[in-house]
Length: 65
Image 1 (cartoon, rainbow, N blue to C red):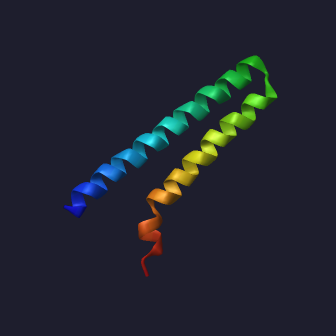
Image 2: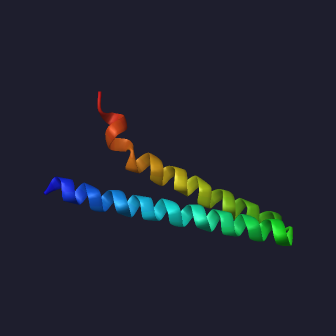
Image 3: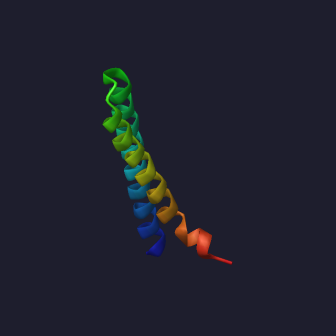
């Protein structure tokens, strides 16, 4: 049963990563179009959160010897 659980978690992490990536691109595009500097920081936050999700999803394989 653990294989099925990890598959669901993998899909969840992938979905969250894609969502954060799309949000980052959308906010970045909006920042470029409007010229608002504060939106760049929000877009960067979405990309950083996407990297954190990637690191958390890969933590099991990174911890193995």
